[in-house]
Amino acid sequence: MKGLNKILVSKAELQHRVKELGAEISLDYHGQELVLIGILKGGAVFMADLMREITLPIGIDYMSVSSYGNSSTSSGAIVIKKDIDTDIRGKHILIVEDMIDTGLTLQHLQKHLLTRDALSVKICTILNKPSRRLVDIKIDYEGIEIPDEFVVGYGLDYAEQYRHLPDVWIVDTLELGIH
Ligand code: 5GP
Ligand code: MG
Ligand code: MG
Image 1: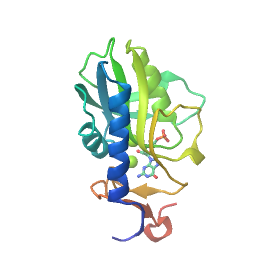
Image 2 (image 1 turned 120 degrees about the vertical axis):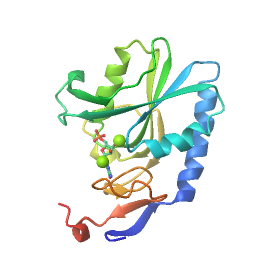
Image 3 (image 1 turned 45 degrees about the horizontal axis):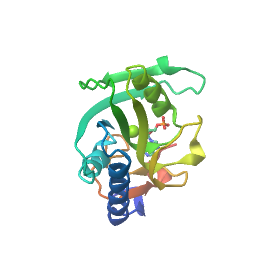
Image 4 (image 1 turned 30 degrees about the horizontal axis):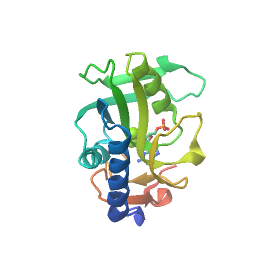
């Protein structure tokens, strides 16, 4: 496809890492009440794979959020476009994301969910771009660290395209005319 010339993370690598994360989460949350919250739309692909690697009884739900990108703004800066319908009081929450980049969205969302009296709110992302971080945020479960490249596939889009691709591709931004 135009602008996609190089696979950064293959389907096989993703599958392998997702299995490991599922096993780790299954050990860590044994005997506890866990709800996975997948972040739409990008997190949906990882969420579907991850939940099937978890060997505990879990709840699942989905949210769609956007954040006003500014590191100095507080938890009020999150806009919830689609909310969960699960009562999370007294439950352990694991946010399931496609990518942590600046960290702003997740920082806001984590704070927000804690105000709803969840027992804990942790973060699991399949891809992590630490070089772009603007806020100090703890990632509890990290899939694969990647360099500062714009990527698509495995849930991630460019202009709502390419989310369905099984591998993660580097976008040639010059070829696609993105600046
Ligand atoms: P942030 O951590 O900056 O608040 O937001 C992360 C979100 O930005 C991700 O969930 C993802 O939707 C989007 N994003 C960040 N880096 C990339 C990238 O390389 N490719 C694509 N397609 N989306 C990205
Ligand atoms: Mg996302
Ligand atoms: Mg996007």
